Image (cartoon, rainbow over all chains, first blue to last red; front, side):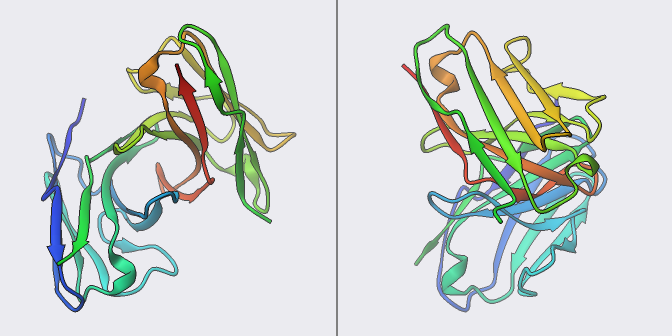
Length: 107
Length: 117
């Protein structure tokens, strides 16, 4: 089974900061990777799919990159609404493995 | 119209069964695969199961294989999760989600809480 490792687990940042979260699968997953945002008590929200495609309605300050065994989610200028937990996910037609999550906190 | 609404959660004793249901509205249900994802209290997301748009493919996480069964009724726009032999570690909020682009999830329900105790 493919394992998804996110880093860091927690990130403290200020409004306006550039933030980068990394996801490393245990084997090559090409670009079959998504990123989600989740706020407490709410369902996750899809941000990025196919490693770098921005989901409709998601602000352009979010971007994804990478392929194979290293991926990044970047928030170019952190906004107050962005403090949340972020998950990467490897997906295909028969499974979906999530990373352990990265909590973005106010510094 | 809320696209996905889960129901059926509750408190159940270990070893017992529970059936969750997810009702879809506002989109052509029979064109989409559907997933169940869970989140234990204070923990991360865990993928549970997927069923293909026509029901021909069903796949499960190792942690639930042999105990949980996913099914769908495209005439009623519902997807169910039958959970048998429940364990304390199955305690979680269970979300149903719509699949797009080969397996990621673009629409999620609000979740239903299952407590095994």
